[in-house]
Image 1 (cartoon, rainbow, N blue to C red):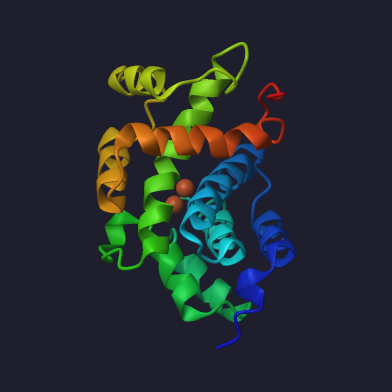
Image 2 (image 1 turned 60 degrees about the horizontal axis):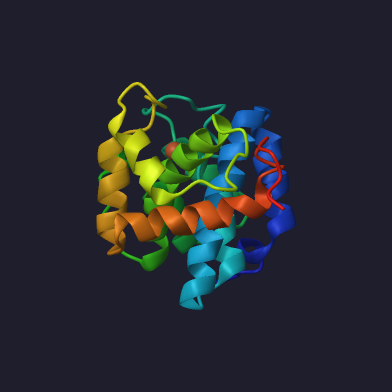
Length: 192
Ligand SMILES: [Fe+2]
Ligand SMILES: [Fe+2]
């Protein structure tokens, strides 16, 4: 098994950009990457590999925007580029409609960070200081407002944290802290 490609950030970024022109989608990838990396670091796992799985989890979304194609039609492309099967499986496992059980800490982490990273990002976008003073309490309040970031499935957020076995507030806090350093890349005011 050649894991070299799995651990190459430049290769992952290049593949993402090859298939994804949308700035919003690239930002989503970066946000999920930062959150998953934070979990990898905390658990002493392979941060590079975990980060690249996160960076690429939606790489084919722009060309396969429907559930009958995303992410399953992206999988052969990943295999073609030399990504190992555990990597491809982790990418596939984020999609509920494929019914894959999330078996590894990486798969559970990706799922838990996917929707919540987008939601925390959205919370930052409506605050003058971005993520600087955002707290889990106000994120939870926004989760209860159905009209706010309505595209984010609240059940997925709760199930993600449960699947990972973390308290929701701690999970939100970790994601906020993971996103602060990349505020500028996410189009948010930089946190100093
Ligand atoms: Fe996806
Ligand atoms: Fe995603």
